[in-house]
Every structure is written in C-alpha cells, then in structure tokens.
Image: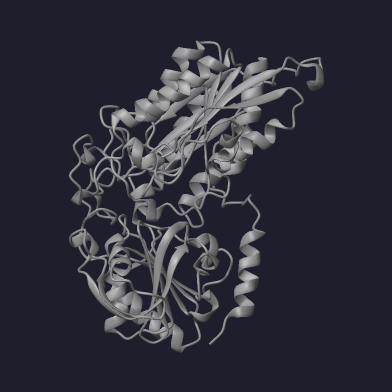
Length: 541
C-alpha cells in the first residue's frame, strides 16, 4: 500500500491553507443601531507621527493542575531553551509574529522585546506553576521594562489558562503588575488562546484582549496583527477602549470545542458578525480550559468598543444569551468511540479502502496512555503508526542496555501514571531509530506487528500533521492508521487537508483527567455544580 501521491497533495494543501474562514450565520441575531462614527485619523502622515515604542513579552502556559509530575519551576521553564531576549522575543509565537509584522506597516513604531520564557518542558501536561517561577519571570520582564525607559504601549502574548500557586488569576496579575509600572495612561493589550480561563478582572488592568476564534488556531497571527493596530490607535488617541465582560456559566472539555463544526462554529460566527456590522467593535470568546483548578474556569466573553459602553453591554449580553441557547449541543460534542470499537472500525476501514484513518486519542493529558496500543496488538491491526507514547523510562532503558538501531526490542512501555494511562503494554519488535526527532534530542521508534511503528518520546507530544512523523526510516505514506495524542489540533493536517478518509475521536475507560467527565475531578477552587451542565441532571456529556 502506498499513499505517496495523495500524501504529497495533502501536505501541500496543509502548508498553503488560508488563515481566514467563513462560519455559519445564526438566524436570530438582532440588528444593532447605527454605530457612532470613528474619530478622524490624525492630520499628519504616519511618517511624521510621534514615534511609538511598545514593550512586548510572551508568557504562555495551558496548565493542567490535575496532572501528576509536580509543580512547574524555573528549571522546567528553562530546560529546553533559555528565556528569549531582545529581538528573539519577536518570534516567540504566531501572535507575536503577527504583532511585529503589522508594526512594520508603520514608519515610527518600535517593538522592544522583554525577556520571555518559551517552551516549558512537558507543555500542557505540566501541573501548577510555582509562585516563585511566576515572580521570577514577570520580575525580569518588569526590570527590563523599567530599564528600557518610558514606553507608549505594552503587548502581552498570553494564553489565558495559566495556573499558579497563590495567584488565582495569573494573566490578570501580569496585567496588574505591568500597569503598576507604566501608569494609568499607557495602553496595554493582549492576545489569548480560546481555551483561556478569564473573567472581567483582566480588563480591569488592560485595555483590550484579542482571542483566537478558530480551533485549530489558524488566526493567532491575525489576532497579533489586530492587537498591534489597536495599540497604535490607543496610543494615538483615536480609540477609547470601553469594555464589557460576561461569564455564560458553561464549562466544556476541549474536545468539544472544534470550531469546524456547529455549534462552536456558530458561536464564533456570531462574534465575527458583530465585528463586521458594528464599526470598531471587537468580540473575544473563550471556551475555557477545565483542567485548571482556578476560580474563573469556563466560557468567557470580552467585548471592546470605541467609547460606546451601551453597545459593548448589548453585544456581551447577546453573546452570553446565544451561547446558553446552544449549550446543550455544545456540551454534547462529537461522537466519541471507545478504544476497542475505534480499532475494530479501523480494521474495517482499511479493508474497505477507507484509509488513511486518523484516531485522536483525546483524553491522554500525560502522554503515556496505552489503551489504543493494547487494542492494536490484541486485534492484530496492521499498518499503524502511533505518534507517540511518552515513556522516558523506556528511552533510558534502551540507552542503558546499549541497544542499537536494528536490535531486537522487548519491553513494556507506557501505562505508568495510574488508571488514566492503562496498564504497561509489552511490545516486541525492532529498534528502528534512536536519536533526534519530534523536537527532542533523543527519542525512539520501534517497529512491530504487521507493519506497525511506535514512537516513544520523553514527554507528551501532540502531532498535528502526518509529515511530522517523517523521522529516521519512517515514511508516513507507508501507514494506513495514524494514532495521535490530540483532541482537535490534529484536524489541521489530517482532516482539513482531506488527508484522512476516516476519523474517530477515541475515549478512554473510566473518568479521570482528560475525559469529558469533568465531575470526576477533585476541584478545590471551583464549584462545578454552579455551571452547566453540572447544575443539571446530567452525566457531563
């Protein structure tokens, strides 16, 4: 079997994908009154306008407070890469790249990079940030800000779902500390991931917040551009940010938040329509991140208008009410298969020519889940690549035993984090690769069974495109079934390119971190029963 030709076409399509998308239009939107005219632009051209110096930083973490492994320290934040400095910060993420690119449209706008941590070891599988690490990195930024002298604005590239010991709302605390340094008149804007947990506290200290409207996040760069242009207007006095925030009282797992399907698509389209119909209105919607045990989890809405509080409140109220009208379907989400059924259906799809198949192992927050691997072996499914299973212990054992590529492999892998991971699974095969790959200095690939391959990594790795699996001797076009540790992002390369003919979201038995059954989690800072669907007679689906 070879899918080489189709694979090349799909990969090219993924690289050429357009960033903008058009959603479905809900039928019942009110018609807003005519908006006031925006203030006239300055009489002077940009070339002779007052130079603007904008301090910029990045500090982004989606924190899984229920994940094991201990709190996240300064060492964890600097293990993969030291903090970025100066112009290095301009490339920290797509939000920042969009911001900096837009700044070059102006003759007299200068971004100033503040020291920013990048790439925490373990990513979103890491637990609470320590207060010491938060203070350390934010403190370094503020020291650099003071040294840089007066600035005309601040851009914060954040996530929205950071959780820090002793600091209930970390992103709001970042904005507060920056506000204390720059004073009340210097504008502060920020960008957020739509999985952010935010409420009105952030906009108490900042002027504007721009959140992605697509998941996968195709519009991160666009939100960065939007942040820059708005910051210029704020600094030049042609925009007066007037804001309204709402919490609709809905909590959902991220697997149901794919904006490629209704009703998530409809919610974001409604926000886009308000922006299109009301000049100078910006509508940011967060769906939330429930695996952070913080007081402001759940959906949130931020609306910003140009000095029109009445309109800001009207839009915020409408968006909150609309989300609640769609909440039952929103919370229900997609059809989710258990591992046994998903593997059985993959065998059928392979036999009937409905491959490639993509299996999204959505619930695995720590990366070592073995439920699908177990079924692949038990049901003798061939042509499978699993990318990946986290097992730093297996990699260490391979190294300590002196195994080389081509040697026989016979070890148990994964399943070492308790019931949420399943039991360790014995894999017998051949060590096909030991060395760099998937962004790690060292990872392993084992071939086994009927043309199968298992990628073993030292931490959780979310793969979103089959081309990422081209490591060592592995050629993605040689496989029919792709297993990835992903909820939605994998749709970027497997679904929305047309690559995978069959797609299944795969659940795990039991209720624990990562599943849709959030009421199994032991929240200490959240009353889950105060939010839909847990304030209803519901099983959480």
